[in-house]
Amino acid sequence: MNIAAVVVNWNKKADVLDLLNDLAGVKSPAFDVFVVDNASTDGSPEAIRVRFPHVQLIINKENLGGTGGFNTGVDHILKLGGYDYIWLLDNDAKIQNNTLTELVNAMKTDARIGMVGSHVKDIDNRKITVELGANIRWDVIGTIPVYRNTITEIENIIPVDYVAICSALIDVKALKDVGIMDGRLFLFWDDMEWGLSFKEHGYNVVAAPQSIVYHGSFTERERGATTNYYYGIRNPLLVYTKHTSFFQRTKIFYCYLRSQSKIYFFLKNQSQTFEAGLMYKAFSDYMNNQWGKLSIHNIAQSNAPKTTYETRTAEHNSFKKILISSIGITSEECMTVINCLRNKYPEAEITILSRDDRIEYFKGYKIHILNRQKMSNLSYLIKESIAIKKQKFDAIASVIPTPFIYFGKRSIMFNKKGEIISFTDTNTFSIIKILFLICYSEIMALLVLPFLLYKSLQYVSQPKTGLMSIGNHGYK
Image 1 (cartoon, rainbow, N blue to C red):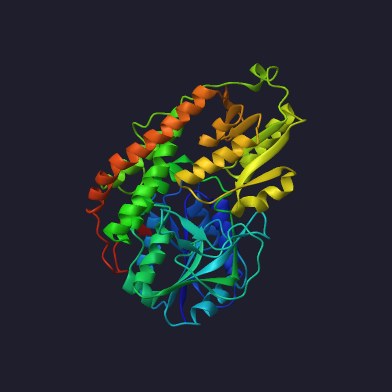
Image 2 (cartoon, rainbow, N blue to C red):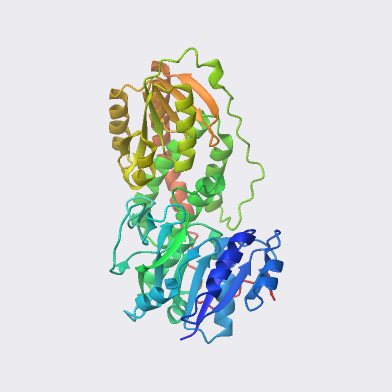
């Protein structure tokens, strides 16, 4: 049994050196280590050569993203030949001595398994499961992670649609049949698409609970605006195009357009023009067959007005009930907002609006938790807004524009540093305005849908071969 481990690195010298040190301590089973460096400028390649001369280093001439980085390594290994399995690892993952052993054990339980993923636990809170694989939603674009952000112990192998490739073992025989990841994606949603491709070729994708790897939580780690508003929109459009019929795609894209158009107009309404521009470009690039790394030229920067607490504190120093929306921000960023509000309004009762798969992160904050439903249709939006309105919050705070902020007496918009960017009183006009934006977004979804579906017809699957040259790299 011959195994190759592939690690992709880009400007994370300390992380990749820590991982390589951990890998060096794994004595069984034996494996060779390949590091693909995406043109790092922090001295990563030089440090790897000095400290780990046995590691086979592949240096890309430019940053090809996570997708292109892994494809470079996988393509190289397939051309070398002689390997049975390939172990893919993120450079910031923290392994255990038996992480690989348990992946191999799970792989051997069924000859039809093509991909096995580790049990991902939070590197900052090691009791919490980040996820044990995940499944794809087929009513709207989205995923259903297994045991996400819960404290759980499980022994049985779990069949899923995909696993996170921060630690995943691939059967080379299956890989030669399925092919490498879709290089158009650059980063994000590449592991989702790959898992679906394995399953469509008749292979099973499973998560191995006993194979532990520690990694930053996917909901509590800041991913940045480009990932959230560009790759997180453009890439899943391609994934669903490749794995649905036209009829399925029509329903899914319509639901997706309804939700995304609301987000777009709320961003515009809050003068977050950069984020709104990313969303527009994501849809535009999908329809115009533009892939790879994002080019942010001609995207306007945000010009949200600045307002300080000091100018409004005297006027609103009697706040008794404040709601914070956790939509789109990490628990750490939520804590920054909470601390700011507690300092200014020490007598206020603070409640956080959170989905149930994030509640574990907020239990230690000594605040009230309002559980947000997972549904995302218009009826949910209306019911949730009415429920919030009935609680008569003095203020609703948020970082990401959401219609919920208009159903308290005042709305407070923060940036992710905990600084206020707007502070407004809610009145009948503001509620009418947000209802208008919701109705307008529904109309726009209907108008854009035919163009989106027509443009989706241009895409076909990539060639089904793993021996696919990536190019643009050199070897140690």
